[in-house]
Length: 216
Length: 227
Image (cartoon, rainbow over all chains, first blue to last red; front, side):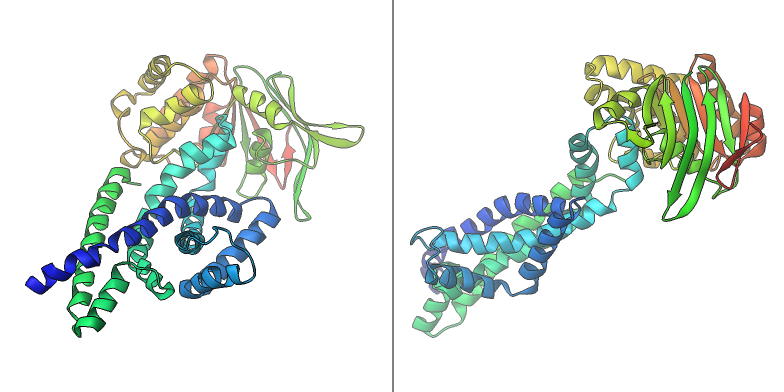
């Protein structure tokens, strides 16, 4: 126990990067995913084609591979989107990857709203923007929230992939302590930290689901 | 003339669905299009409401054209024109298409507040008056899933009528109703017409249509008989 208390502060130093990666990815990938999903159901075939290709590539290759290509590959060919700061490249990889998953979730949600409701709204005089905002969106949120929750939970754990790039976060710290002290205890400590994080998020998601719930 | 339909033709993928459809609906008149499924009734009502574009012919509501032929070419109302025409138009769908995430009241007020930009209190009063006249005052705070088929239909009528359209279209209004509710629906429709609304009904329910309509037109194989 005293060993755990001794290593805990070191591990928690990495929590900022873990939580930061998580937060930035959620905040940016959900709206971007929503935009891509609108392209997926667009009347304009070029938009449908491009967004379809995007989700195919980003969902069809490992996140770790995308991270490596963006982190090492882009600067190697002279594209330094974010200069020499390293974290933004990580965020970028996570955001474009998760946006693809969210886009597919939103697309299925949008397509699940009865076409008749949209025609009824159109006849009542609503504009396309009003229809999306007042009629489609609330129903999409309700129907997709469980799947979105799944992705959010997965993301908490996927942040550990950052360690592969040599960036310090809780998993990488646990690994170095484990090597230094020849013990698996640090891994158990990080495991518990992930569990606590996902427990909090699960609780919040359940509350959100209750809030948007209505019988159909 | 409230609704004027002239020489309407429509084909889907080479399959001729409507051929030379002509009819009118006057103010305060109840006109029914009677016919079996597949006869083309639904396509007619979808053309009248601007949800479908006919290949030839003209449709005018209150003198404004949804479509017409000019120099042999079809001209359709622009988005803006269609929006203005639809202010005179209401439609009650066969499966109602209520918004499931809103209360009954909100279903009825939403178009008033968001489309017609009326103050919330005024919209609520109008909606409650409408719901009361349809016997639904106690259901204002209910959700659509809590209602019976007949009640849902009355909400759909309230939603379409609250902004005072001049022409109201019904798609198979009795398809899901029992005889008693059908009687009630007949009365509601007649009352709306008595207030001056023009009513266009498509149905295959012969007794109902005979009872409710001022004029019955039979649709067969995409053509109107006995005009």
